Amino acid sequence: MSALEQWIAFQTILVKEIRRYIRIWPQTLLPPAITMTLYFVIFGALIGKRIGEMGGFSYMQFVVPGLIMMAVVTNSYSNIVSSFFGAKFGHSIEELLVSPVPNWIILAGFVVGSVSRGLLVALIVTVLSLFFADLHVQHMGVTILVVLLTAILFSLFGFINAVFANSFDDISIVPTFILTPLIYLGGVFYSLDLLPDFWEGVSRLNPLVYVVNGFRYGVLGVSDVNVTFALAMISLFTVVTLVYCLHLLKSGKRLRE
Image: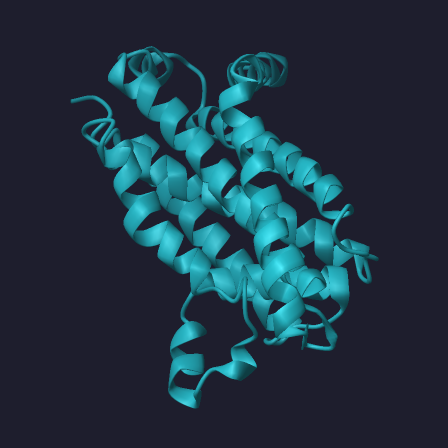
């Protein structure tokens, strides 16, 4: 395929993905806005007043970056896992696989579509958070880089889940039993400094710790982990996951059965 044909193929998949979640915005964009608003009210306005400061900031300011990243993670993941599994379940993905469209174009179309939803939800949640907390981004470059890498990483994770899922029930197992615990144990609502040494060490095995703290550093300028190391870990996870996703597409495992 020529470069122009590849661009048209990518654009077609991307537009389809964006139109898909925009068309059902009451199910894709409204729920995270409502959920995050409830988090802001409960953890920030109510509980936060009793907790006081954390990390040198009000509790509301401390948790907002983590809540924004929670929205990015869950929406980037859920968009691609439902979309790609739907294509797999309806056997339309087989038409893409036998077409001359390169595998990386197929993956890029689905991933960028999911990333766009994650970023759009992040923007909505950020605007809502300004009604509850005074935020001033300290390191814009780090903030943007962490958001983009995180959205890409969890879109790729969602792709893997979709490939191995056998039913629509299977696409909810990972978010329920793996993703949600990782999010809540990733330092969204607390500082790692509050944990005993053993549990702090265990927490550092959680990729969400680097995501949350990297973004918190970008927004507030504070982090429980070394920011350079956090960015390196997120980048490593992303590259490894990307290579594995391309391998799955190339092998056709669980896609051509």
